[in-house]
Image 1 (cartoon, rainbow, N blue to C red):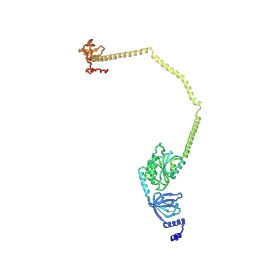
Image 2: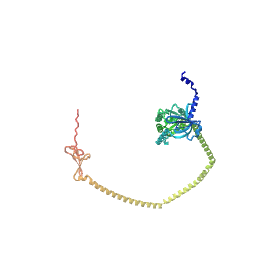
Image 3: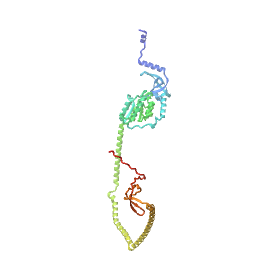
Image 4: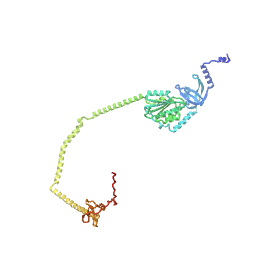
Length: 474
């Protein structure tokens, strides 16, 4: 047997538990109390009250745990991205062969570089107005189609579908994307813009509501939803959008740009649709209330009518006054007719008295005098009108004599007409042998034109041209 084989044979044999216990004692003896500075990441509060997280820097990561009793006494509660100084003891956890620090005290060391960068980006985008409340849109009460942007293989989509099915089943369109890694931000932004680019009436229905969902994780895991390209796509969305990234304690930048933030993906489904059973119950309650109101109104009206009927008088009492007034009126009618007859008889007698002969003769005499006076005035007016018209007629006669052609004939001229009365103004219009009528100042006489015919003239006085007919070819 060689020396090496002999040495291996003499080595002590340990069980796994013995090795784990020995390592635990060694680590705890070497680091009984230490102060470690790092950035909190992957924070996981447990239902038991314990708090688990990681302390990390740019080169390493250390698991940390705060027990329930210690967590109650901590002045500074651990938060994602905080740079802290943790005081505690280093130990090991044999169940998974890892070492960790059991934290007893936490002090704030400063905001981590990652959180500082996110805070600076948040301030810059807020200054552009991307987080303004005025930009946020109202969610539809009951969307017909819901678009979900998430990983198709995770538990998130199953939770959303299960919750929608339990509350109010709706049609769901899933746009699969990566929710972690380098390509996650670009895919999420493209999915948001893709849903918004669907036109109304297309083969694929346009969603009425969008949900961007992802499960919980560390700040690094959720970093895709803090990217500027995703935040701008959320702010530009014309479709109302709910952000459901991480758990209730996780906050990303798209939470500020979205129209509504949900603490969990399941809560997003609850926000998206109402409970169908509650709507049915509410509708039935409204129906019952309306029916009760109608029945109560009818009952009140019936009671009111019955009360009015009791206080109304009987029919004979209602018409007694009118019947009595009719009797009085009928009695007064005869007396009124006699009185009216007497009034008209008196008026007729007065009119007859005015028609007596003496009175009539005097009235006729007065009327005759008025007629004579009116006749004299009419005769004088007619004489004045006739004299005025005679003066005007004499004036017009003198004007007519001044412009009359007979004065021209008195100076030795004659008026030449044809037998049909047409006026002959030029010699060219007179044909040889044509009979003419010559009118002088005292009387008219007949004459016959002698001489060769002259060439006819135009109205302008120039002779007309003789247009020869075109010769015939045949």
